Amino acid sequence: MSQSLIMNNKLRFEDLQEAAEDFRYLLNREYPRKAALELVGNRYGLTFDERHLLHRGIFSSSDSKSRRKKRIFIEEIRNKDLAIDGHNILITIEAGLSSRPLILGDDGFVRDISGLSGSFKKTETTEKAIQFIINAIKKIRPRQTLFLFDAPISMSGKLAQEVRSRLKRENLEGDALAVKIPEKILIGFPGVIATSDTAVIDQSKMVLDLAGYILRKKIRLESLVRLRRKRGSVGKS
Image (cartoon, rainbow, N blue to C red):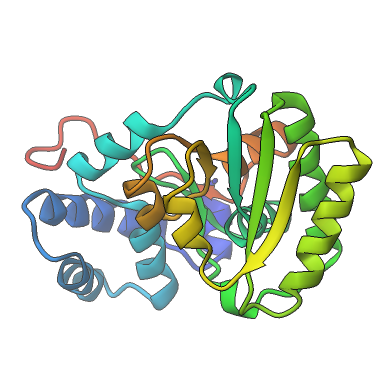
């Protein structure tokens, strides 16, 4: 994401870069995450969106390393069972298609910072995102695919029904369900999980950044924020 585009989104790149360094420093020294973010946010006068961006993308070195070890390459999916965290993946892809800010996390996963999950509504962009996912499944050929949508979110049942129809139409093995707590099924799923949810990743063995893969293939990710570690930073690994 260019600095000019960050400014257009009212995100101050230089301050964010410095804040990210300080946030990592505190996390690596086992400061409580919430307290560390508040301390850094107050020091740099960060807005709510800027703090949320750091929360979604900056992690301790140990957490980042652990999650990166669980990531698998897209080529490794063939003939494995795949579970997709439906709203998580859809919202991230939609954010990229709509040029809303995304962040490339220290752990290698692309995440949105919109916070739209509770107020998610199906749009034309949703249709496009679903088709991108279906096309990706056709290419990577998992043995079967299970979409899990959050039932408490409006119209989740109809969304699951539409995805089931598309899977059938494309002769793809799988199902789509709207369930009360998808995380419970995802965490116990005996295959590959497509999500960027840190709580799910931390309790899983094989994870795919499906949204990141699709967005990199389909569009220029000009809205992607990368808050990389500075070379030569002392004590800020």
